Amino acid sequence: MSRFQEVEVKLYITDLEMVAARLVAAGAERSVPRVFERNIRYEDAEQSLTDKGIVLRLRQDMHTKFTYKEPAPSIDDELATRFEAEVEVSDFEAMDVILKKLGYQPYVIYEKYRTTYTLDRAEIVLDEMPYGNFVEIEGQPETIKALIERLNLGEFPRYKTNYMVLFDRVRTHLKLDVHDLTFENFADVAVPAEAFVAKND
Image (tube, rainbow, N blue to C red; front, side, top):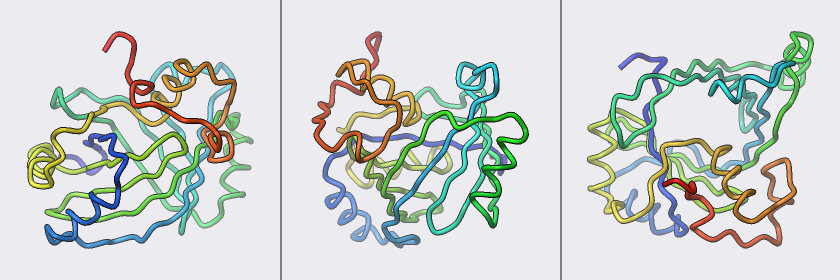
């Protein structure tokens, strides 16, 4: 698999403590402790990137990373596959200015708390999103499937799409008039599991 190819799956699991316990029992290493993430996605002047499935993202947690993603041919019907190139940058504000000077503008802000584990050369992250908790597993396709079985996570809903698409589904389902996926915007919002499911699924 190319270093610029991302293969992953998201699982909607409300009880992340249970998943963490299963990871520890399986011998996983907690490679990054729980950390707050702030992400900004950018759009071009024509607002065309999202429609093309292209992501320009600036992320700040313990580090600052700039990421470019685009759709890639699927190698598995059960898993999401994307082209992803990511670099670490030293200054969040300076990178934001550079992107704006190049004609890109902030499109949406989204937040999360993330705890990262590694097991069998795969990365398993426990994501606390403003609208609910998810587990994301990234690695080789056969490794991802084996870990879902090994950790006994097969019963939980799986999603191949990204958090922004899920955000759009939630906004539509609940008729929410919010632009950014922040904890403040969802402080008093109860999000049912069915809100993540596309109408044609």
